[in-house]
Image (cartoon, rainbow, N blue to C red):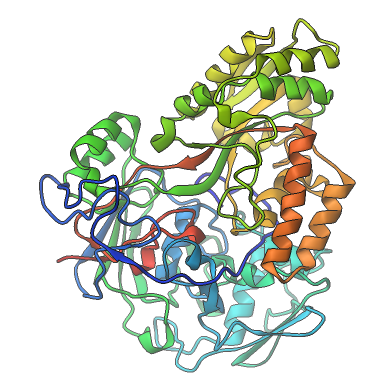
Length: 590
């Protein structure tokens, strides 16, 4: 799940991690304790006070929660949205059968019941999931939410010709042959012709999978599994005013300008143990000037950045020096990396030469240093995921300096003792990625690797680096990118990147075109595994094999410096939302 990746098509994954106890804090080590922010107003809780724990805990209701952002949603339609912040914000107006627990850190990745009475009853063969809806769950007009509403909402995923975008995991799992054509082409009278979902009555919904998938519950926790009522479905226009099943409803929306949500008086808190619904209203303002946005946050005009991409370079020093009590610096779950297409650099030793010659400390600095960029990454599995091993450093990157001797030895083995020429592809609208490419370019010169930088249109990613043919034709031996999981497991993170069956002609994310039968087979085992610890061991094996293939050079486990208004209450970062705050739990001091 990312901010800018609506083109992704990924098989989801998930882990049911044990819940952790909420810890209430007023300060955290490394901060200024009761530091001042918001133009001098007191109330800040301290540096990192909301990272994996609660800052300013409160259940007081009232006030207006004010978001600001420099990036609009790809879509506010629950079946179409794919940006990470959209999934977080959607908790205000959508509900699902199951959802993520409202707790800080790793505990947030545990699944709990939402519209359903429990997390479902699963058959012994893992092919049938049965849910019963709670009593009293209603739409914003007071009508009951039914099993048919949930089925219809999920069916909309198939209508990619009408409401394109969004994740298609449920489509891939429930209808792998893509036989259903979606509700808008459904010839059945009730438009509920998807055979894999049954609704014997308004309170019961049954899913029948052709092949068992241990991560199916994670897919049902996505906004894409939200109910949509047929008589309120405006197809492509639904994103302009989604019909609410959550604690807030849409009052107004002007694209690229503003959003206003107000309380849904038909929502019954007794049916919802997840959403606190503390503010009376929620507003979002969009601006095209990110630096101005940071200034307005610091001045106290707004409470937080909805995009949660971090304070920009222009304001970073001021924020850290003068307002550190209002700052959190969480891990985002993203890895920033270089990837080497094998069609362009087929020799593994040539790829190893690049990895050994790269200066990991310089790359980290180019991305903003330890706080603004993140920790040095040594392998392709983020630390929060089952199977991750932070000590796995096969190429010695934690040393922070390039290993020129090993790089030169690898060049000899690949038959290029004096180096070779290649091209680094990088998005032209990502300054930090360009800086990263320049750092890598400079370090490769030391061993004779001449890497020219080619800037491509970041808005055309899917058809440029997402096209294996274009990559080969342009000679892109190195691609600079980043990736975050839709679900907090190895499968959700790694499969689209390294499973050979996910190589696509367009919209490809397996840029290296790695197609290893052993890796593919391990994914098949992981898909069927219901024990997250056992699945984690399989992901660990996959990660090791990926490192051995020398197709990735990870740079950093990304961290952002995010602003937290002194007005905010009940603030905490959630691993389930890539280190963003759990928006549905936030409140404000009036």
